[in-house]
Image 1 (cartoon, one colour):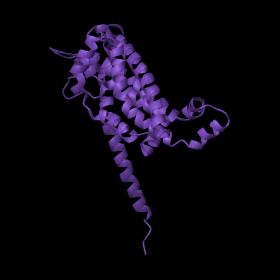
Image 2: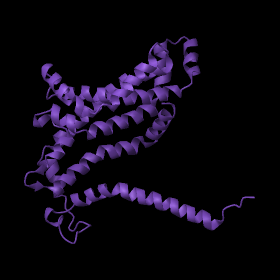
Image 3: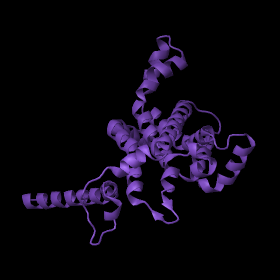
Image 4: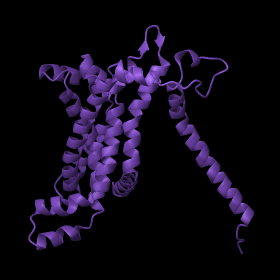
Length: 282
């Protein structure tokens, strides 16, 4: 006969669980907190020994320099434009592909889906030189569109599989009822099915945003002029030959983190729902 755990055992179990969660959270958030604190320090106080953990005096001069005396606002807007267009193209193409993969049976479907998924495994560095040569030949080098097209092709496989899993969670009866009521198949898709995939689209949008926003190698290779740089490349240029301007670099990092944090705050419920639904079936 098994004995029920006592109150002390439950209390101890809760303490262990909360301790692990709090420890993990602190470990994950420490770099961000350190970046924020460093960005609020004067350059002369950053390397004091023993270290000064809290900024004193607090200064905003690093942020003012980033916003008014650097090209970071330009890089920020460049990244926003490239990420926005990449999300738009990736979700449009992948949602249609995911719908076809979920609803239709055709010869070679599983093989085709496997090949699409296989492209995710190819390291970006392998295709870097061919992409550079191709972009040069077609005249797209050092343009926003070369990044948008390459990033879209990079993101489509993962998003297509995610959306396929999400479409499979939607009952076919909804679509069949719409067809019986006189709706065409495209009409049933756009009016009935597509609106139901908003959590999946939100999850995919967050994934694409984070991946593209943080990408460095392609952005540094396929754009050469200063006015076309994206924000990860702009951050890299704070590492100079004579040292690193840590205060200004951390201020730029905090500004670069802001869109990702806001995106997670506004879309966290849809992101978790869409990701879990897609992962179960995908």
